[in-house]
Image 1 (cartoon, rainbow, N blue to C red):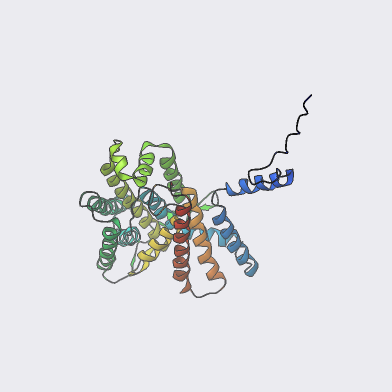
Image 2 (image 1 turned 90 degrees about the vertical axis):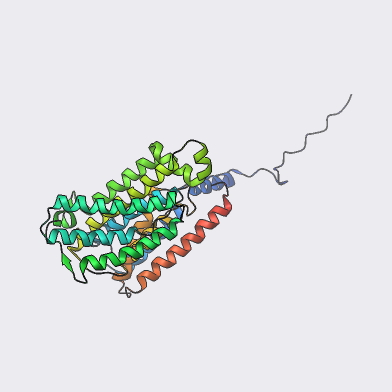
Length: 343
C-alpha cells in the first residue's frame, strides 16, 4: 500500500506565501488612488491653495475667488483651443498675440462708432483668417508649426502697435455687460469660458473630428493611410484656434475696457496657456489630450498668480513661476512617455 506524499504549500511567484488580507487591502487602495485622474495636479493645487489660505485671510473670500475665475477665463479659452491643436501634434504660439491684436482692432472700431455686432464679427473673422494662414503654411508648405506661429506672433506684436499708434484706445461701455456682468453668481466671462471648454470636451470625446485629431497626433502617416482627411482637419484646426483667439480678444477688451500697447502681453498669455495645457496632461508630441486636465492647469496657474499677489510677492516673479511650472511639466511629460512608450 503506497503512501501519498503531502502536497507542498502553494507559494507566490516570488517564493513567498500569499499576502494576507491587510496587504491585499493596501494594494487595492493604492491601485484605486493611482487611477484617480490628475491626482498629482490636484494635490499641488490643494497644497498651494491651502498654504495661501493660512497666510492670507483674503484668499478664500468670495470676492477674491470670483476675481481669480474672471482673470483665468481668457487663458482658459486660449488653452481650450491649444488642447485641440496639441492633441493633433501641432502647436500655435501666435494665439496670445492674436488676442491682443483683436483687442486693439475692436477698441479702434468701437471708438470710431462701429456697432458691437460688427466689431465682434470683424474681429473674430480677422483672427480666424490669421489662424487659417498659419494652417495653410503648416499644411501645404510643410513648415514646422513652431516656426510659423512664432513668426506670426512676432508680426502680430508689431501690428498691434501700429493699430494703436502707440496710444491707449478705449472701447467705452459697449462690452461692459460681458466684462463686468454676472449670471447666477459667476462672471459672464467665466460662463463663456466654461461653454468653450465644454464644447471642446464634447468634440474630443464624441465626434469623428475629435477622434481624427487623436489619430493625426498619434501618427499622421497612418492617419492618412486610414482615409482621414489630414489636411482638411488641420486647416479647420488652425482656423478654429484663430476664431477662439478672436473671442478671447473680445473678452480681454471687455474686461480691461481699453486696449494699450503691449510688447510682451501676448507672449505672457501664450506661455500661460501652453503651461496650463502641458501640466494638464496633453502630450507635447500629440496623440493625447484632456480638457479636464487643462482646466486644472489653468486654475492652478491662476491660483499661483493670485497667491503671489496676496502674499505681496513682486509681480516680477509671476513669469518665473509660469516658466518653472512649464519646465517641470515638460519633464514630467517626458518621463511619463518613457514609462508608457505606447501612449
